[in-house]
Image (cartoon, rainbow, N blue to C red; front, side):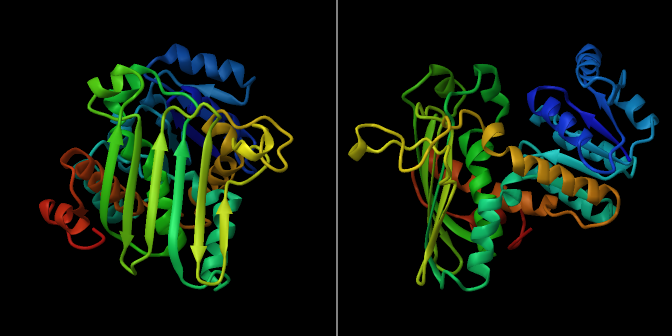
Length: 346
């Protein structure tokens, strides 16, 4: 199998290397708006990758699937291009910068019949999968509370903010997606707040560097979601799943950056390795599993495990949170759907 990859930045380079280790993938053809960057990545991959001079040349090489890791602003167009070529496509989230662009991809993908997989890697993390299974098989009873946190160790560069979509859409959207996936329920209302105590470029870009939201699901489960760009202790991603018969915590491994006040500032109970510093460290194995799944999708052996409509549902929650944050009021998701002329779930 030959796969294409568009976008050769940090995550693109990581994905290209990962794909070359996936069973059945014989070659990766990499492309970038800067052909020199594509050639540089192919050289670093020591013969396993072929550099294309353009996206058109990549398709002309005859690829069985395409992985999109380009800038967010290009995602929707690149998905449409893959659908034009009738080639299965994996695209990192988000699908598009806004709801109309996302809706356009959803409708096109569903009408084309060509598989599209969106990159919400937490669905492939062993901890989240275990928590989902525990809830679905009744181990936890009925859920009353979810507590999610996503904390970056250091902020992104200033130039990233204008095209990121903001903290809820760029960061917390992973929590929104995985909670929907885990529970099988939909968010109906949110109340969110945001704050800026760090670099001025967040405020200048209309964004915040720290946020918190209260979510109500359609079965009255409550969830809190918090995120920050400034977590000096390390990269911290966790989810507490609290039920009437039991509870589980996702992300409480031997690299979680938690320090105990009761033990003179030492790392908590059993850490032996350095705390996570980046999302790639934290979700390395999940990314590998996710791309392995896409190879199966491209080969026609399984359906997409995360279709564009799933990404749309998570985006509705992020949009509602950002509106709530800006206007200082609770927001019903039905309000946003009505504005777009969309009914429940689409």
